[in-house]
Length: 241
Length: 241
DNA sequence: CCTTTAGGTATACAATCGTCTACCGGGAAT
DNA sequence: ATTCCCGGTAGACGATTGTATACCTAAAGG
Image 1 (cartoon, rainbow over the protein chains, first blue to last red):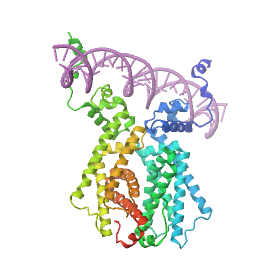
Image 2 (tube, helix red, strand yellow; image 1 turned 135 degrees about the vertical axis):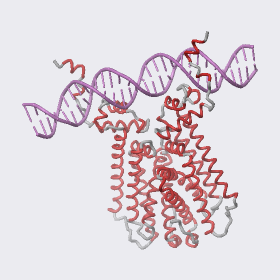
Image 3 (cartoon, each protein chain N blue to C red; image 1 turned 90 degrees about the horizontal axis):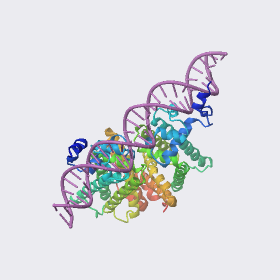
């Protein structure tokens, strides 16, 4: 009776192969975008093929390509911010954070170590999730306004986290809260460049990381010099070379 | 005799319409890329259509899309660097550059004015050539390695120019040459963000420009504080709010 | 004067694309 | 036990794409 239909339609319809199709599509898109093209320029059929799914299945999960993009960036953002938050809390647990020291020199040295640690943390994440990281950065200046905005918001959020973090150590009025927030945003944005350099030139990673640290130190040092010039003259603090 | 052929082929072949086809293609690509898509994701037929040319004509001028991209970025880069260089020389002609002052305060004030001026210069350029500027920045993190490299080189060159410029005013050993070069690169890169913000939020332009200036001042101030802490404490210099 | 060549055109083709319509199996809810 | 819908499939459609082949013309070079 229905033999004909079965033969014509095939039996594939009866075996849903474990992993949810939505994730399959996202993975496929990531793989393609990571190696070849930009997210926005992917073809629906292309992605479906890579995912081993029927083209139409795409519509079941996403109506747009923007929608898929947002989903991917969501995933990336969640992983990133969670990872950062976790590792950021580690030194506090180890009692390493002594923000009430009266000795400014020591305080600055600690700030430096925090910065260094945070940088490493971002760079590590970029290395571990290279594909999604690169795709994300690509969309930062990409063609889709939706994805651009999503990425901006992500960066802004991370910058906010960083600002709170720093403010826990460099308490006011050593440097104004507003300034810290401003610096944080600039730093996070600059990290897109640093991290791309980092990924693309594995042989210069140490140097790149150092440059990133120096950059941040310069900013904060400048801010402190603005707010408390005398402190700068008094404190004994040497930059890393 | 050849009437048949003429009728079949049309007479359009006999009128080359003034402007060189190469430029037409580049303009068409710019227009399309500026509004809709990314450079790399443009279709050859699409561009030819926009240029009012036969698809095959594309091949006469470029073999790749990368090739067209490089040509466009070349044009952009030339215009940009020329524009910058011209306007940068203006204050020197006006005798405004007094790099041998013994008064560090005055010197810094001058440095600030130079910075402010340079920023305005970049932002003006971005505004006047919005389309090509945006396309350029888009390709900075784009998919084509060729275009990425071209853009990097352009930014590096501009940074070098800026470094030379600054070194003409803030002479060593107030701050080390190496540091100036490092700062310049970071600044130029950060300007990609500032200028995009600037273009996208016309109502906040004054504020954005101010933030950019502040950012740069912080960096140099930090560098000076690193090299000559006492100077920072002595000099009377207030940041713009 | 003849020939080359640079820049333009028309036509054709196979491939790919996005989307529409229709069919289907299994699980959840009623 | 039936119904409903979710996630999957198949097939066909017209449009668009990149490219190959071939033809044309105007100008330049010998």
